[in-house]
Image 1: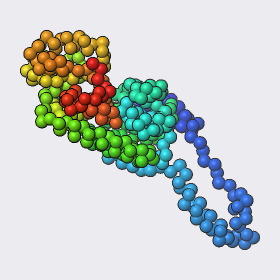
Image 2 (image 1 turned 60 degrees about the horizontal axis):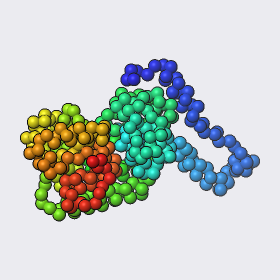
Image 3 (image 1 turned 135 degrees about the vertical axis):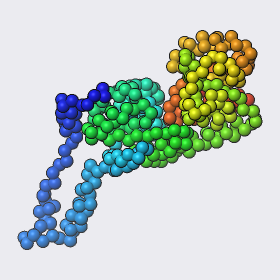
Image 4 (image 1 turned 90 degrees about the vertical axis):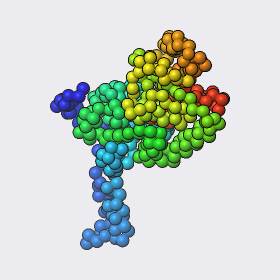
Amino acid sequence: MDEPIGLAFAVKADSLYRQTTPRPEPIRRGLFFGSCMGARSTISKSCTIFLICLAIWLPAIGSADMVTDQFGRKVNIPEHPQRIVSLAPSITEIIFSLDLDERLVGATQFSDYPPRAASLPKVGSYVHLDLERIVALNPDLCIAVKDGNPIAVVRKLEALKIPVYAVDPRNLEAVLDTLRELGGLLGVHDRAEEIVVEMAGRIRQVRRQSACTDKRPGVFFQIGVSPIVSVGTPTFIHELIVMAGGVNLSRGPIPYPRFSKEQVLGLQPEVMIITSMARETVFAEVKAQWQQWSEMPAVKNDRIHLVDSNVFDRASPRLIQGLELLARLIHPNCFPTTVKGEIQ
């Protein structure tokens, strides 16, 4: 997939572009132009005004804006993109949240939220993009992410004159900024601001409620089943744990450190949160394994929980749902209301 594009494919892509891109109609000298020109080729005052307006208007036909993406790259983007391909599930969720799903013509595998996103044409996984499928959708804009999307595919898309705008949100504040940025880029600034304001309000509410106690329980967040992988400081989940009023027991410079069972037992977690793609099918087994260690506080107090991974690992508005869920699991007395996302 990452080999140079062959001549046949390049010709196919160019042909597709020509077939699907309407050609501008030539400007003909019609009745108005004829009436403007007198016998001595003089131009009336009204005609002069018309021609000035026309000169201003013509460059706007098919105009594009040169913008700078979150990598500092200059990207030439259509003024009103109508055929967008999302190159990551998080981008798909953002586009839907902006009420622009009618502009989405393609998305990556595992773009499954909201449920109707599952019916979009798929262009491979976000780490293994299918270049031919993307080109066949004739997009006027692709939106990419730094982590995962191969730069080789991005460059090939740009070589085919398909603009690729890349984002790189690394924390919750950056997710809010990205929402604003994409909202402005796609002409729905007001809708983006509405989402950001609502998210900011929910963050403030979590902080207020978690202040009901000074206790900060030790939390071990386990990703998957085997090997045991947790989350370091440079991750969304670390930020959410701290914001929800917990202490991340696996904090440190490594984003996703591995642990042995003995190391986890040594940390004596008060709350264990496990996320797995397998969901319920493995939870009973994993919980039973940990329950052998009855002296571990999380086992003793029955505080081992399985949660939906998607609300924690996608840089989308649903991160707030993940924050609220964590806050309730860490401080159930401060957050008595059930929050969607806990499986068991």
